[in-house]
Image (tube, rainbow, N blue to C red):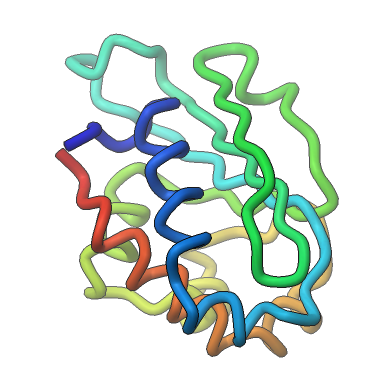
Length: 138
């Protein structure tokens, strides 16, 4: 099982999205790459204090993954960039925190892109969490 966050985790997540009929249906009208930027990573991960996972998403499919760590994470770009503390991302993956309420509360920051557009895809975000839970975090 790959460790979150890593290139291996991002690739496994992309694969899980592609295997999810629930995600494919909920995100059928979505078109746009998205970056999940994690900050305040624990030193024991050995990848610096930030990581960015870019997912190329189009019509319910994940077409590619890019992984950036350390200083390169801040340079990653996509139409949508969501940033949160490492522990917040773990809570989202565990299902303890839903992404849209986390954005409203400021726990996940929409660094780039439109919150109102993202809010239209609540069902897709929930399907993404289920796919992430299949991958796990360790």
